[in-house]
Length: 457
Ligand code: PNW
Image (tube, rainbow, N blue to C red; front, side, top):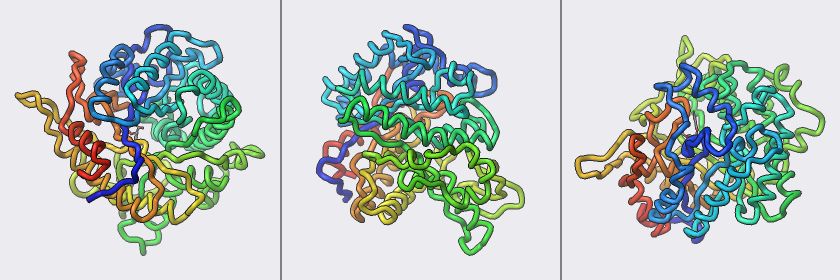
């Protein structure tokens, strides 16, 4: 039986561009994901977030579903270009009205809102000036953060500035599979460093406005086990991959440094973007730490690079085989629930009492299951995924990891970025033709988990 702390927070998450739709409604400005998804060849079937789940208009129904499931927390993101269409300080009042209504709806349902300021939808106007590669974006982000804290801070007490800065830098600027679609390792380091600085800048800006907002980064993490840890090349590759995805952010936020192995190999590309005082700024004390976990990646021997989807090893110049083994999800990702436990225990051991409270801000899985003849959605594989990951999490908690909450990804089936609507991560099914919502079996299972505080897992 899994056990969780008494006031553990159970929730689910979404992101603005993936669910809201209403891309061109009520004064919203374009973001890099509008541009990217509308350009031919960037997304599966040419899908865009123009309509998505139409959450912009259907949020009362969606909040009612959250209440029905029994969610205690809901993590959503603000669309920067809905609030500030040009990425400057000229407000779009209707954007503020929308989030006011949404937050009031969430609170009336007795649900705690947590929000992200940036879930990948940079105002296009800022991209036109260089986006995350241009240091000026850091200043614009700080101003935006302060404005959000000023207006919404009386009701939103938990804010993550940036969702998955790793994806912003590596998928957006290294592999080119996410907006803005660039493939340039030098840009990766610039974006990676600027997101670190932007996090700290936003945190300080928000704290200057209000003292009662709790702020933390949301980092997506994974383990990179080498098939043969005795093999020097594989051990080195595994170390580099871990440094690139996990330690870049953890070292920056917790110690004010970047991993030595990266500076040794790529210092000539990394050091020019770091300015005096940056690393002191990076090491600002976070109130909590958000970790998103999906899967681990193995590091195997290869003659030619044979990477899985989204694998940045090629950008680092590595020749490895990371093809997953065993049963795969609809994303082609492996099932590695123990990885979640490993990460939690690792940070607990490494940082001890200096480690802030951890929230699992995303964990979930894509499977295509839809309604059967009776309208039931028997997504047993999703239940199994959530069950195994929550069991692993409870083991980590039993070993002392300070995990205080869990947010399932995602409340709704939604726009899965470059894979469009083909991949369904929701515990609620969305029929995109009718916008009809229907609870999957996993949502009903999750209700029981929440009610029993994990005892039914
Ligand atoms: C996250 N990887 O992205 C995002 O925060 C969500 O918006 C997204 O829908 C969800 O996970 C599912 O993909 C990730 O390659 C994208 O390891 C890629 C990876 C991890 C997370």
